Length: 296
View 1 (spheres, helix red, strand yellow):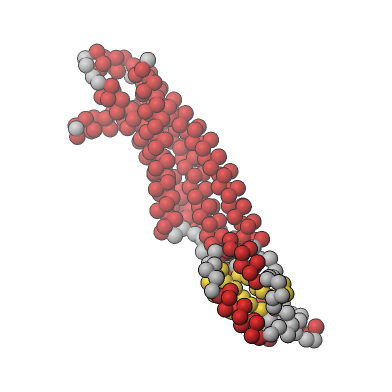
View 2 (cartoon, helix red, strand yellow):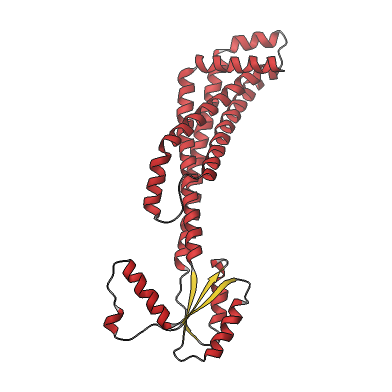
């Protein structure tokens, strides 16, 4: 068995060298496809990180009526805190809300506009953090019960919904592009192996005449396709390794404090995807080509 594997791998290397032009074309196309696939994984990972970050910042700010009965406010606070969708509820007085607003304006380098108004225009508020921002609507309905103490709830779920839609669209478009390029790579691998088969047709015929099985003929060419995929994957990971620093810096510059970049988990995911796609396309393309040839 080991001798057969060694023979098949040796013949695969010989086939790559004999058809080096087609093999090089297959590898280059493979690298381009794998780079696109890795780029899609990186972008989607960044989008998912951004989505998680935005979701973690989403909270419901329920603005209360001026002069609302403190006992009714406390009752509503306890009722909302008991909801399974709610992580925490915090009462924010109008004075605290004004102090927070002034701190935000100072951090952003903006003037204190509250001095122009002359009085505190902000209401008392309940700040509700959700376990899942998608439950915004159901918790909002509870807060806006008839004859309640909540005057208004600003809709803060729009940004999250937009980010979810953008992520879904990007994932769909990216997958379509990768599938189309993957089909191109598959066809090139099939043609590469077919050229190798045609150039060794006499040799294969002699092997079959002396009793060689289809497996004995097939496996060197399958290994040849796997080598195309392997070399393409290694080249792709090498290029990504060189570009990982600039990509991380660019992602951090664009995303600000959103935690994106080349972490250990993302690196492992990209390596697994690149190797899986490269070896899969190379092996499947070779198998298709050899199967069709042996049938004929």
